[in-house]
Length: 210
Image (cartoon, rainbow, N blue to C red; front, side, top):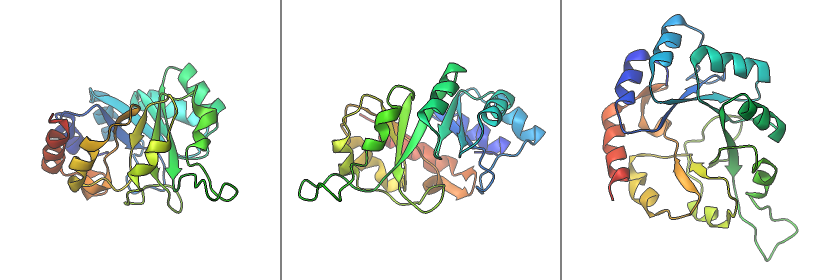
């Protein structure tokens, strides 16, 4: 998110965390504008900063400036980087692109999509499983959620990638023991960085219902 008024409206919803993108090639990029800084600092929800291959010093600077609680990493950040961020007091969410599962009939060419998480298991608070796409940023498409049955790690995970208002029923059917939540973005936007508050509220109520 970015715009102060829209941020205030979304903050009133039954959500756990709000994300702010600090990747300057994104249409949702948050510049160091005083209006944005003040609005984000006033936000009472947990705040996650989204970064892509950013230097440690820059991430710590932005996190302090905007008073973030968590950092969501979408690049090629190392386990060591994740550990350093946690040592500085931030929760870490590391994103992994998901494409396929192991095919026992083709052990040589198959790739376990969750093997890449192994070296990060002790240095992240959450993993974020997203749909693989070219470049950085969301694809707007869902990957096959049946793939997550293959995930055997201990780190809780969030799901992203092509989530839209018609996903509520499928989300409520998920029963993986490490499934912790969802990351909503473009499927609930009027345009980049502006969320449809009514659409979000209706969707959240459906997902929250027992």
